[in-house]
Structure formats: C-alpha cells, structure tokens
Image 1 (cartoon, rainbow, N blue to C red):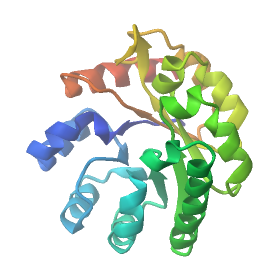
Image 2 (tube, rainbow, N blue to C red):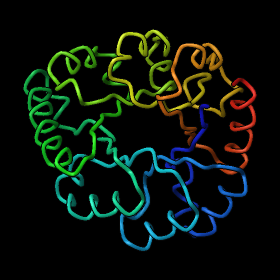
Image 3 (tube, one colour):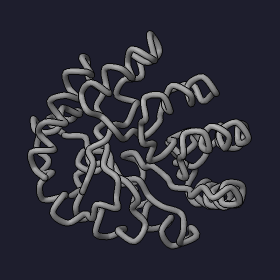
Length: 234
C-alpha cells in the first residue's frame, strides 16, 4: 500500500533549530517515510533517523556535494538503509544551451559510477526550467536508462503542464513524486489548490514513492493537513 511520506525541505527551518524535536513531531503525526533534504549528513543525524525508525526513500543533495562528500554520503546511506540519491537541482552551468546539458549528462554518468558500485541508484529532481524548456526529453534520450527522475507536481503545474501527462511521458524513469499543490503562482498545502491528486494516485503505482513538500509558514500544520487529505484519497 502507498505511503505518504515527507520531503524534509518542508521542515528545514525547524530541523535547524532542533532536529530531534522536529523528528519527534513528525513521528507523532504518523510520518514513517522521508526523503532527506536540508539536514546535516553526518553520524549524529543518521543515528537519530535510525532511532526514530524512519524509512528513507532517498537522499536529495546537490551534485557538487554528491561528488565532494561521496564517502560521507555513502556511509550515511548505509546507516539509514537508503539505496537512492537524488541530484536536487540542475547546476547553474547546466542552463548553458547544449553545452551545459551535455556536461550535466557526463557528470551524471560519473556520479552513477561512484554510487552504483555501492548499490545506490541515482535520480534527478527537476524544477520549472527543465519543464518550460523541454529539457527532460533530452535527458531521457541521453542519460543511462537506470538513472531516474523525481517529478514535482508544483513545478510542472507552474510551468503550465499536466503532472499526470509528464509522469506518463517518463514513467519508465520516475522513481518518486513531490506532492505540492498549486494556486495563483505559488505552492500551497495539497487539497487547497488546483491539482487533482486522486487522478495522479489512480495512475501511479505504489512502487513510485510520494512525499509531501511545501514552503509553508507553519509546516507542521501544513504536513498534518496534507497527510490527512492525501491519505483520504487512497
């Protein structure tokens, strides 16, 4: 059965203030699965994740850190039983027409070789740029078939595309979906915007992980409301 997890970017400020208290609040809400983002990648954090028995579906980290901190990230992944890393954003140089994307593809394959040896798969998370400029079809053509995509319902809708259509176009690569609602040009708690999540759940298999994400002023309230709404659609 599908789990509704959490992309921890949502609670980045709370984690910075008190990581353990944030974990405790999430656990009390019934959050079991997390996509790790914007938290320290170190032994202390890994120990706390293990203590709270979170299921880590992936680690979302910048390309630069995935290269520079590979040894520490791999150790962290082993400790929390994660087998998936995600490049969080296209580097600035990736926006250079043709040359930038070719370089990005080359670097993705270098990363793949580093992490695949450790039993860790690699994916890429897009933003609006890649949707508006039709970069995903190019990446789909040039990247190794084992490299995945993590798609984002907000950025797709913001770019005037249909999240389900984008999923269908790349379902052979999609490993996860960020569940973010959209209204009037900004993100909002799922269930309060324009995106039909029930329609998405009806087409996406449970093997594709789904995590709540929102740039919310009061993230704990937003997570509770989003979880209640989304689980009601299952």
